[in-house]
Image 1 (cartoon, rainbow, N blue to C red):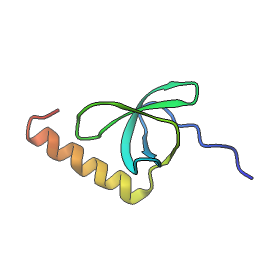
Image 2: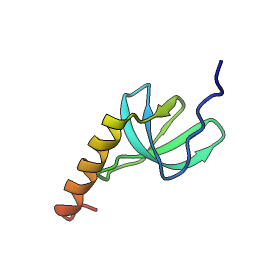
Image 3: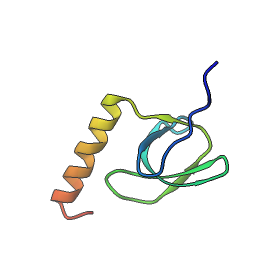
Image 4: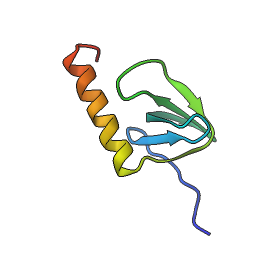
Length: 72
C-alpha cells in the first residue's frame, strides 16, 4: 500500500468528491483549500488526488483563456 497523497501548495489537485480540479492554496490538517485555475471562489476538500496530465493541460488552457479575457 502506498502512502496517502499529500498535495503541495501551488500544484493542481482533483477534489474527488466534487470531481473538480483546483490549484492548492492552503493545507490545514486533512483539509485542502483549492481555487479554480481560471479564477473564482476557493473551496475546501477532504479527498484529493493529483491531477493527471490531461487535467493539468485543461487547467492551463482555462487559466490562459481567463488571462486573455482579463479575468485573472
